[in-house]
Length: 220
Figure 1 (cartoon, one colour):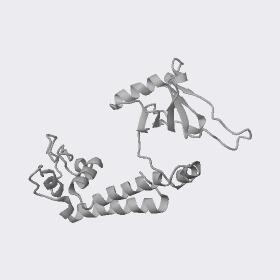
Figure 2 (cartoon, rainbow, N blue to C red; figure 1 turned 90 degrees about the horizontal axis):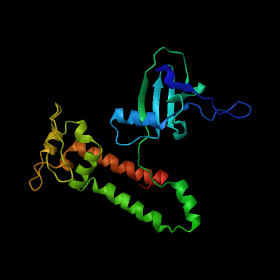
Figure 3 (cartoon, rainbow, N blue to C red; figure 1 turned 180 degrees about the horizontal axis):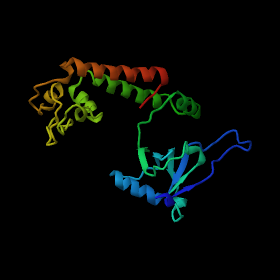
Figure 4 (cartoon, rainbow, N blue to C red; figure 1 turned 90 degrees about the vertical axis):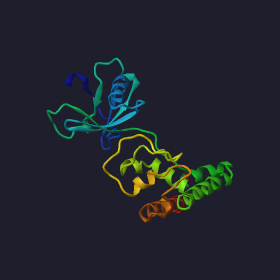
């Protein structure tokens, strides 16, 4: 309801030239918990990407707002146009993501007496893990499963860590990947490394990993 949406001013530089809160509103922790529950999340994100009528941007959770008159607080910079549509749409939310070392972090840590081996060792591990994708079928299956590839192309709840087929719903998409999912531990009838399309994907992932290590020293 309109009564649950309030407004807070943007934070700007003294001369008004720069806006430091452009597109960033706030939301109460209690309302964030309700959104997380409605979305079926197992945690409450610290921020949501939203649309609300003619407003859009990010809402960050502010525990200090709990108990106040409104659940959502928008800033003027978020309102692009006036609209009578008053439904809060959640486009995305903050979630854990992969992080890595990079050149900037290494340059900061190295002068602080962090030994070079602390960077070289994980780089070696990353290169070995990437190479395993194109020579080791178990590693290839684990990678494809972690990326949701089997789900996307007609997987049936296959447990890639054991090679066992699960009881998930069978989708319409079948073919090469269904053959891969039919593999059972101890009696493999299909090797993903012998399938040109899947092998090309794995090779591209290997090349991408090597490229990131060379260009940005992005060490996972």
